[in-house]
Image (cartoon, rainbow, N blue to C red; front, side):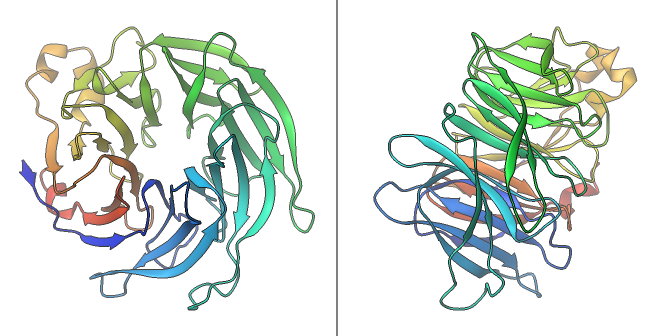
Length: 348
């Protein structure tokens, strides 16, 4: 099923690639997004769905010194977030704090709490501890996987706890396992790797070319999903890692981002460079009986809907944790669209 956008939109001034749900804001459905321009001052936008649910309202607009290539909101403090940025010559990362008086016409400056991983390789992303309040962070750069500890107020210092080299591989991103906080999945040019944070050793790997994004199923252990250049969207059971459970070929070009819903088991979003967002229901494929019966899985059609009303590649996806039937998408031209998937939940 295909259709244009029925959601509500918000336009950024410049191009953009990343958007994050503000999980710690339990009173509002809020997203944080940042721009990507070399020639102008970049911006971070704090946007909320209005009380009537009919528009997206800017609650804060803040200048950011460099291009934003990754952005993640702190899961336990709605004023804190991380960015990975590029200044035209090198990549860096930092943790920022939104000032108290956001929402005014002339917003004050962001407070830079601390840089992350100075003098390291080309940083790709920052991962926050999967749930609850915790001082641990992970940075992934091309050469290293690093575990950090962020001290509490007032010192706000960050120190490295452990680090391991990628070796012959070049990391490109990753995800923290919500079922095992000692495990992460890291993507690279030619494989999907699994690491134990206690030993900082690789425990397993799946040879795959150009995995762009990975996300764990928050409701079911051992299950994850990948977005790949060649194979589209792939579902995996890590107990049987030789081949995917299923390949979902809903994008005609590169699949770039993929996100499991935080509440509805098996509900997945994917987006790509074909200017499309796909909504999948893949719960059948990850049940025990279907894992052992691939012929039955082949008869199921997990695609619920394709959102095609975009004019550029869609790089950013974020489910709302507060209202898990709502998601935000971000296309490269700086257009944010928030949609509700409630009409499709009855089909599950």
